[in-house]
Length: 214
Image (cartoon, rainbow, N blue to C red; front, side, top):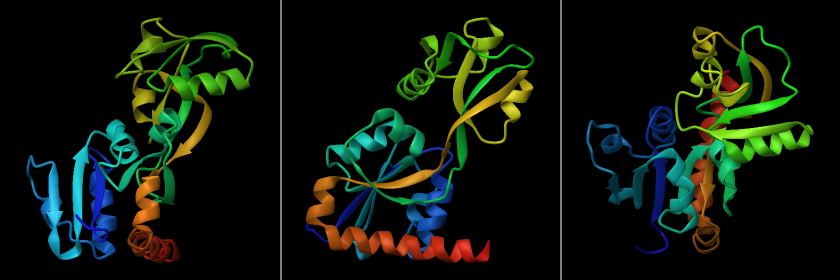
């Protein structure tokens, strides 16, 4: 494909629908991506775009190695993986926060066991606080850890806080707010700069209008 083509990696899951809504509002043809299909690669020839659907944690890798020029992924994954990528735009979608939570009514965390799926972020955070801790990496149902006395606190993503409340947990600290970002491969940014920035500006205009309405 020539320099006019862009390949964009999109994360499957909860942020895909709002991503497609944003792209559609920017005049990008997402009709085939919105269809109920098991396809993972989509080509929009008229707009010289190719889309790849993948797991959120894999999106930065696709972009880093040049399998995709651009990608959409949560800031939590970018902070955890620390890859050499360009972050072009905050898309203001998938808003949530990365928090420290504990069993409701338990004492302040001064040190101990921390369960999370974000070991790098967690390690940096508690090291900056000078607390002694031991990490326990889990891949799902992080809320179980305090209930099973596996960990004193957890570090996890929270949107409404409903899941924490239902499991008798409470937020005690917010590490950082999280939204989805548009990222770029550095090489693609150099070689396809005009095309990348034209695409980015389309999204910026939609976001600007949405902010004015709000």
